[in-house]
Image (tube, rainbow, N blue to C red):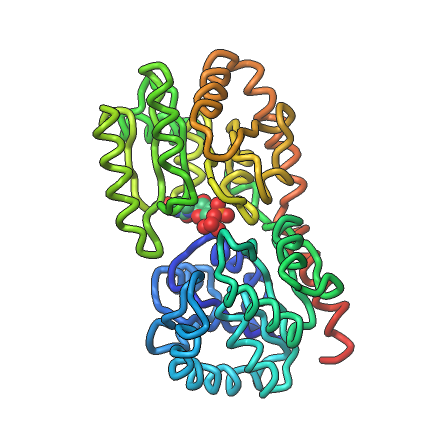
Length: 384
Ligand code: UDP
């Protein structure tokens, strides 16, 4: 089966990193069409996945955009749809990995007569998307997609609540290669030394810097923890949240935490950095659609504390394979950090259990098999 994958982003967010794993088995018979250039393209190329940037300028619609702003972007969309239609004719199906890719993919599917799959990586709720954008996504999916792959029950529920057709949808979690998360102890001590984390209890936060990812909640919690508790914030403002970055730096200064909170920017050595931490914190203040970092922490054998909402609840069972706290509550987060600091043995048992179960539950080979079975069931008889 030949697949034309579409993704609107040039930057590697969670949906894009997931797409690399999905596209790999199809690399000799697929193309990833991007609507923006950037480091995501390089990551695809280094995984030997064919990629082409199809749009010449960034589509100016944002998650919170109104109908008027959406219509104004039509002049950019029309030539792009034309290009995708011409490409799609060489493939058996179109696989849209993001919202704008869904809209373009839906029109291209109609004109090229190729079936459309939508991989839903978002929670289509008012917290994340404007009413117009929710309506456009749901209508495009309902009318044009033959299959909607939701990355969690939480994403599926929001899709259905927004008017999405349940009969189109299946849930497939993100897949991971457990081997990638096995890091030699010598590398870990080296990086801890290099980052000046010796003798510290290190909390890692791995996410793009954005208000709803809640880095400010972790900083506030650190201020309530003993002096040897420090944090590394790994990630950058991928989608222009520069005000928030400035706000975080001001918060660190105001709380006198300059020596205890380090901003490392965007990194590609996540497994190494995670393994160098004593605890990984996930602090999203709005429900997380899936939460790749939670699974990655588990695969590194590190305890994880996550905000109790959205997909995180499907990944973490309190006290069994991690810890859950109320979203947006720094006191509760600080209390959990202190408990982990004091009860290291008990915490490590939980982390070891999480590693063993996550290695099986999210194994990329099994997940890719689930996707290929869904595609075959829906499309193979029509394409072969
Ligand atoms: N990540 C990364 N470098 C960074 C920060 C994050 O590669 O500096 C990765 C992280 O390991 C995870 C992904 O970005 O795989 C984020 O996915 P998640 O589902 O947690 O959030 P999303 O970006 O989809 O909102």
